[in-house]
Length: 243
Image 1 (cartoon, one colour):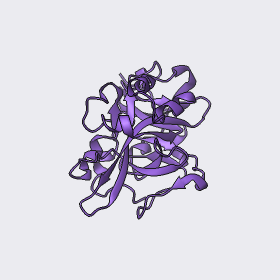
Image 2 (image 1 turned 90 degrees about the vertical axis):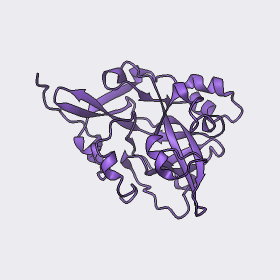
Image 3 (image 1 turned 60 degrees about the vertical axis):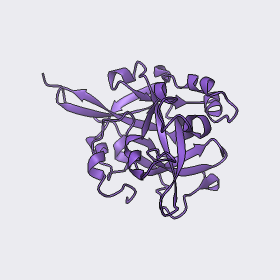
Image 4 (image 1 turned 30 degrees about the horizontal axis):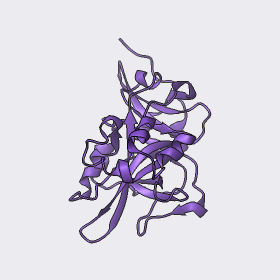
């Protein structure tokens, strides 16, 4: 798709070192509310395998009536170059106020990342099996996120984001030891409230109700950032475990 930096694809293939290193947003944002990045081509159709360094829809705190396209992998305003973004696709809720890259964004530039599912790899007796995790209702939900603006040496502005993670709920604990923070309803508005106390906002970074979620195995093709089609979200029957 041309949205992942060449030379980094090998680092992202089969990536499971991060919690929430792939997700889906198969809907299309309302065109009338979208603001596109200047000079940067983005994929605006249904997305079945959004990966780090790609541009994805984001609703920022300072303009919640519009959807923007930001780069996944937060680049702090003080960074020397963009490479830090590969290490900041996720931000742990427990240490947001401690990490230099995150403590200012969580106060001044929180955001929502629309999604309808995410992938995680579960260790098995024969390797790792990818799972897609979504709501039982198949509704859209929002990841809690933070964003920042970085200016390159040639003056180009890059807007980027990180997805916040927390401890797993009962469903996720069987798959991975972390999960993204999922927000619905009033929690969405509170996360974007510019007047909210940051301590109060951070109470939202708890595990989502496992009873409203589902998880099912999917094709290993999702490990390849070059592959993005509807077949990736279809459930499969994984091979039996061998002991």
